[in-house]
Image (tube, rainbow, N blue to C red; front, side, top):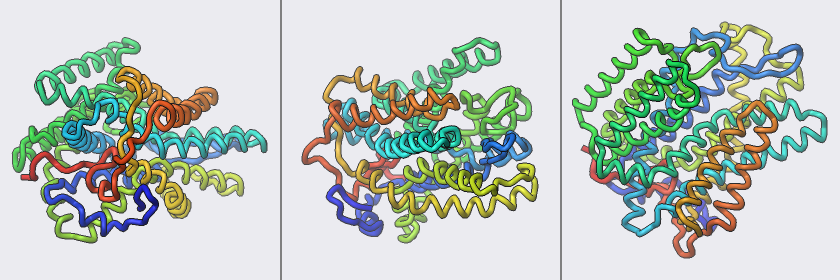
Length: 460
């Protein structure tokens, strides 16, 4: 990793600047979640031939009996949970330093959208080349496939833009905020079962926002500790199991075709119960994880190094898989066996290895973009909060549109992502505050959008 001036800084050097009261488990959870998502997507990705043409799919579309894997690999609730912890810590720091809320949002969005814009630029060029050589259809399929993980960025952008408000409200009236979220979520969930259109889509925001609020509670010391927290996690595991065994929700935590009630499109009651169980379990284990990372110098250095490239891995892992599948299609090596069978799993091994072989050099190339964004200091927004919220909404819509199978919507998403990055967050709308750039130790001090700047109080 390198500082804003380009000097190389080792993970060991960064590790020496770690505050003694840091909740190191938050960093490990974030890095592990990114890795699990990448491997999980590679495992469930299916490339098939449809009348001789390359087509993509999800393993669960072909073999829904593998739904149990999602109870291990669905880690996004945990990511939003630790993201809430990090945002709460960062907002407290911003208040102490006198950073305006609009500047805080602009800084966080700049750090997220800069590496995403690099990916958008790559696929924009790829589409132009594909159109020129007559392979536009295949390239557009690849562009949509590469954007599959970006729903997270669309939702996280909304949570980030709302964080200065939701955190302030939570601190002043925590019970009212939690109660309001539960009621609003319940109304939208009831509307889904009643067949009322539009209203259920509100849970795309409310559901993921709920995990962020839970992260606020963890950082603010409002969650129980010790055995009480373990009991709370166990209670939510029992509720999640009851929901999928006794309720109308399927026993799967990932969306796929053929489901009567999707767990995630939008987030369902079953996903909320499962996600809180997962998150509270992680919180209960956090003191032990942090103590281990304090004792294990190598473990902590690896955690720091992983976090320095985590967003790059997340953004580019599907691009690596798409490139491998594209080459396999070009040389007629797409497997023809039935997805989910033993023979099919054997064919996954070389594809997994090739995906990794492609991803590693790609991440080495693009990670400096991520790290420069992390260490670049505060972004000062030139205009007011309303305009900042409009920019956040445009960014969220653009990223979401990018994954559309409709080519016109996909192109609009790519262009929108690039425009928001260039014109708003790194262009005329904002500038980097002079003399306020972060140093390399900020990778430990919480410069990353989902890294913690140190807990409000020591772990108990």
